[in-house]
Image 1: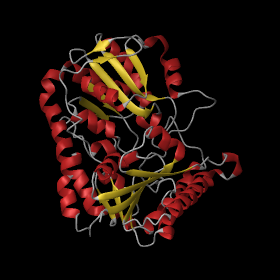
Image 2: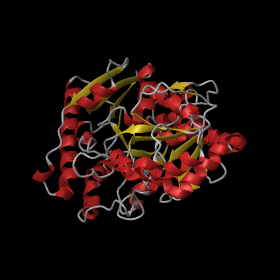
Image 3: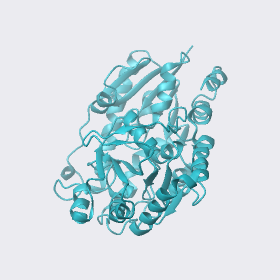
Image 4: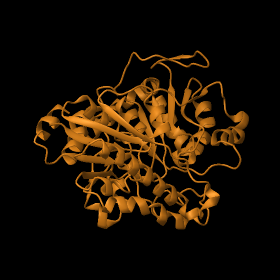
Length: 423
């Protein structure tokens, strides 16, 4: 009999993309997905074979209706209730899951045990908020409001309840696991989501045509890349932009490709409707040669992969926060990664061995490192090879991460050995 599994994520598939796809394609599983309706429709424009979707509508309560330190928690409780109603509908169909795997960060997992008390419940431990040593107060240029330091505690409330009421938890990196209270860490296993190195790999023949200018790029052009879901301080966008005038002056043939939207994922919004891109363009003015800086917005994955494959140097900056797939994927395709000396990056990159590390707050140091890496690209073969080996040895989707995820989710399954062998 197939193993029955429910995946829960407000922005499905989120971090479950690879695992959910594997389970959907395998006869060993029966897959149900619960997610927010608008995001499911956006992320899955067509039905997905092997997956049954259950969705809910949710609009955040206006901020002025609740105290600021309770706004996140209030919406998380509302989301937990909406997910619970979905699960009740699933239960009414006669479906009884063996495993429920979900992200507790937005309240989704709050009432899972209430609806399916017999299921094995596993949470995805992405990030636990703390006042010290993380993102809060990290950047002196963008300081939190006074009440935010209190909100850190309340933002953890629904996640904490979900974690206490679960059977296991997975965190993608050691540093992200270390952010959780010591009491919970013994229940958290570090398993990365996985990088599909069969797909994410170098392509010496890659050619990329930029849609707006028609410019054609290949590996003979010195290309510098920067990728973030949204262009914002949490991912060092302001630091990268301030380094660009010096980089462009020192590398007259270089082209810069910037991928990301103009919203905010983690940082605070600027007053009015102003974006961080607009803020930095206004600050830099004529010092920035926009004929060689290409803002590509958000792009389809296939185009994003070609952007990385054509890149010589990839810049990855981040507050002490969650580690992005993009850094690992840039390493996997053979770009030279210049990253910030912050804990998520330091867990993976050893300076001068498989990449380069710079002070997050120094545009000058960043610019100098990018220029050196771009000029010496052909001589940095050992560093690029070490970066690819790092991803293969520690983050390989099919040969490591999938097997370990499945083993933790289904430890008692009779089919587990077969399933892991086929991963």
